[in-house]
Image (cartoon, rainbow, N blue to C red):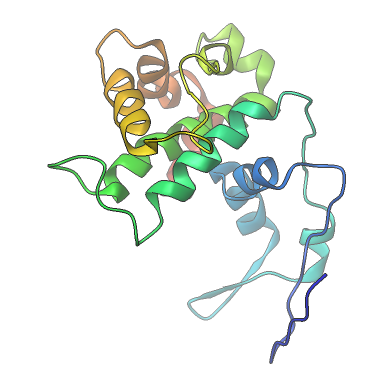
Length: 181
């Protein structure tokens, strides 16, 4: 419990059943952004979201939350302004985008699993603990993120290749990506 004071209406999602990092991954995905944009309304140049769409968020619950939690930890690390860049010649923001793209693909797979498997653009099978080590207890999280990032950039990496072709193989993903770019 905590005290909070706000000067305007705001909404809080409270959950005892779903891991918070998993929930953060889903809620920050392009799919949920797309859904909310289509449920909200524009007020001039501002996007307004009312209570009703939030009450009806189409959240998928899965027992396999660990990959989402791990990637959330990577993104939290990369987006912390106090962290030094993990790469010499690229910003943490640029590195973060690679992991965000992966999380988006993982979320798409939660909702469109059959389509993604049929079109060979599913990625969850490759997001293993071995390929994506937990950084929360690591001595050097930066080194782990560097290693995973470089592996994701390899030309023969199946995750990279599936992300690259996803929009061309799936009209659904293409539409969502175009609307949320």
